[in-house]
Image 1 (cartoon, helix red, strand yellow):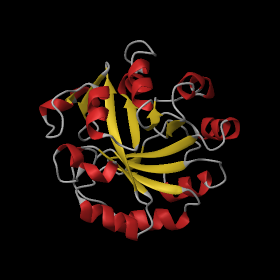
Image 2: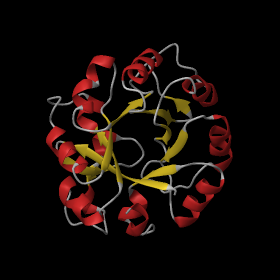
Image 3: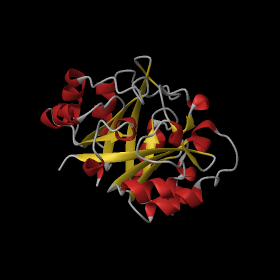
Image 4: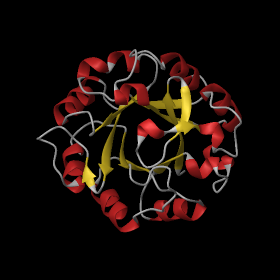
Amino acid sequence: MFRILFVLDVFNRTVVHAQGGNRREYKPIHFSSRICDSSDAIRIVDTVKPREVYIADLNLLEDIGKREKNFEVIQGVNQRATTMVDAGITSFAETEDILEIVPTIVLGTETASIETIEEVALNYPGRAVVSIDKKYGRILTKDPAMPNDPFEIVKMLNKFNLQDIIILDLDRVGTTSGVDSQFLSKIASISEHNVLLGGGVRNIEDIETLEKIGIEGALVATALHNGSLPLEKVR
C-alpha cells in the first residue's frame, strides 16, 4: 500500500503552513486550511486521523528557543499516529531524547553528516530515516564528505540499516507544483531502501504516478489542506 504521511510543521507548539522553504515566513495553518479551524497539532490529528505523521520541529531546525519546546506536542501526536520527527540533528548525542518520544528519527542532509548518519544507523538500526534535502537544485549539506550528486548519496546510504530515505525538495514544499517523475524513477531504481517524496504532490494523479515509478510513499500537507487530496488517503 502506498504510504501517505501527513506533515506537521511545528513552530512554537503551533502547526504552520510550510511554503517554499522560507521557514521564518510560515503562518499558522488554520489561515489557509480547508480541513481544520485550528493550528493545534493534537486537534488537527484528531480531525484528520492519519496513519503516519512526519513532524518538522522548526524550533530545532532553526535553533530557536528551548530544545524541548515542542516535545509535549510531539508526544501527543505520537500517541495518535506513528510519528517520525526531523529535529535538525547535527550529532549522535542529539538523537537520544528524540527517540525516547517517537519511534523514528529523520536525519536531514541539511544538518546531519554522513558520519552521524552512520553512527545513528549502527546504534539504532531501522529507526532512522535519511532525508536528502534539496533547494535551488542543490543538496543542502555542511559536510564536505557528502556528495553533491543525489544519486551518489543514495548509493552511499544503501550500506546503512535505515527505515526509509526521503527526497525532500524544499523548493516544491507547499507549492503543489507536481513531481519530477524521471528523476524520482532513477532514485527508486538505485535505492535499496524504500523511497518517500517530500514536496510538490498535487493530487491523486501524482500519487498514482509515484506509485508506478516505484516510490513507496509521499509526505503531504498542502494537497490535503486545500482539499485536492481526500483525507481518506492518509487514514
